[in-house]
Length: 175
Image 1: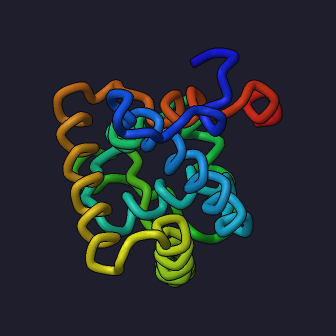
Image 2 (image 1 turned 30 degrees about the horizontal axis):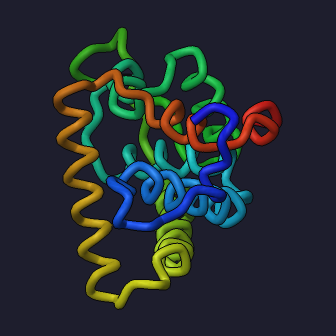
């Protein structure tokens, strides 16, 4: 879609598949609102996702965390450093392997995540405001299932590249 503004495309369902157009538009709006919603967290949505994985999942090492989030390990280091400097996470030696470091949330990090999750849910409700509440929940559930299936089948699929593909060139260069 290089050179084509997805917002200028018709959503006329009689002209073939609008799946990509629909996902692109939802993703673009989600990113705009979520980045504003999470501007107080280091690295915005990327920091939020890292913190969420650390709190809600058992990820054994930084390498596994990078793989789970599909973030380059060198970029992950900066995100971890900034979240640690903000007092939201800390590195600790893995008791099973003293050479490895695990990332764990601090109490402050858990509180910050709970508040961020509340704000993200409100922002997502805004993005999906054209749907009744039950359908918003169903849409989120189906999207999560599809994403997990894709991640399982192709763990290297980069969600940041997917977002970049729907952003205009001027927004991409600003990031």
